[in-house]
Length: 172
Image (cartoon, rainbow, N blue to C red; front, side, top):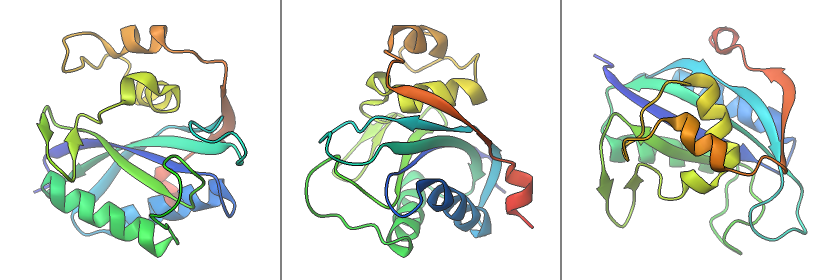
């Protein structure tokens, strides 16, 4: 039974980023132990790291799963690899696909492979805004509402694209 709820951040800035995200969502949907519940709009954002790279396209999806957090991480990294993800070069450099587990139930954990909730999402408007779109009443693990976090982030480098992902069409 897929009773665990997780939120996954998606990002890309290479090889038609919007198409990369749609393809990644299709791959996520095809996994037997993951069910997509909702997807945010796509958002364009300035690169976090080196500025001499294309802007990113980002989104967040809500899933249910029967996988453990590490099993989900493995599944997402396999999808990244299938989309040509290279784990070399500069941190926060260009990439075909980046899939991050943001929240998994109310689990707090940290090891050499995974930190939950995502270690730096409070500083990432390209994560907070699409997450807020999906879960505006979410209470974060620090006891504050997600809206409080969103209100404190800079939105200057973020713009919502007209594309709202119809996750039901991904199944087709």
